[in-house]
Image (cartoon, rainbow, N blue to C red; front, side, top):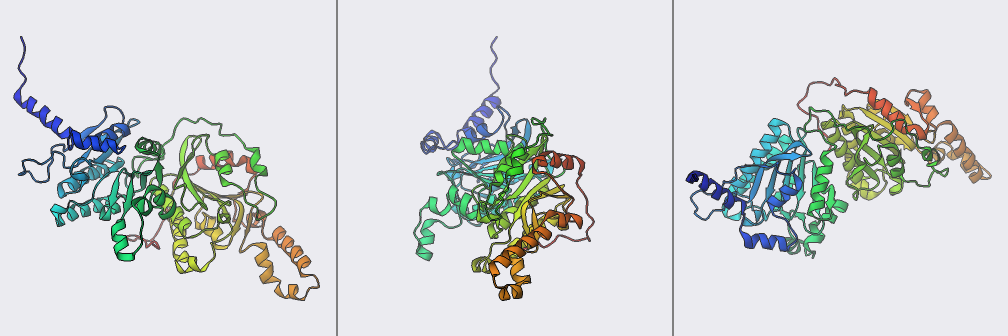
Length: 514
């Protein structure tokens, strides 16, 4: 005997089908014609198969409007990535252009609160025309509530924003408040004011891509941390990123079964540092030789390339790596490198990721532009970040460690738990050439052959003062190690160190130089 389906169940199915249809077939086709997925297709690509559970699919901005589209332009809920729970929201450009109403914003706020209270990462997939103009100030109220929860959630659970279309005006501040921004090449954009407004105010002519495209934010502004070749690649980067991150700030850094020999040495490192002190070498050679094979995952690879930051694993344990790149500006620290390093150090500290610092510091980048733009203020951020960090901190000076630039790069005076150097390290107030010019000015001025005397004095200074053994004898270095043994030395130290609770005077919070 056939059973007649309960009409209430039939109505539910129809409602769900209507909610899942977004802005309708025509608008979905237009989205596909631009080479873009729909919001639900993006979530299916990001999350484990059949793991998504939706929250508030039937929400509308104004319940009394008969033609209101269910969901109000954003799909929210939770699912899993590699079996780990995450909260998600995906703006739907096929519904009102993904524009944000108060109801739309409060759907996002609900999953933000779920992430905050339950300790799971939150991922936002952004594709929106901005505030819904018809709502006036109520749309702005909604944005403000999202911003507030971005700030409240910061440092509690990882927040990741994926820009998959336009993100303009005040909307861009939400991803800017999150930990990582992923953009798609040639199909996503972020800016406060668009090209038309820029032209009317400043007279400058520029297109959307040149003003706020992915490559601009990845290489010039530093707003974007990763760039995907397309949407699928961008979402794959998010999945990969999450493998290095704990779900929240009270969980230890994730570990995987070790796939590389912890005792492995790298004899090539013994010959890596050139004899000429001004000849560059590639710090990536060090990173790839020392970390677990295949584990290096760089962050902000195209921006401030004189500094290198990223995630890796040592004997299966996730860590953060900070390094200087002698191939770019000789590794000197400038304003952008300062911001890049400080932000990454603070993220690793917030989420219990030990820090490995590979320092080759010739100094801060000189120049009127750097001084006038605040290199002092920006460089101080690195100091603040390292001092504030309580995670295990291990630093290695590979070659140059001069002046203040030596101090800021995770030195023992800033709280490094283990501070090492290679035999090629030169640690001093300044380089031998500069030191001799200051200390021996009169002798050089009176010498019959000043160049010969200078060469002799520089060699003597380097032998006596600019050597790791001078620092080691005074307890500033914990050890001088063979470069080839860097990997086993780091693993041994890391397995010994535990996160420390440092005693500080009671305070609401410190004032980081921003």
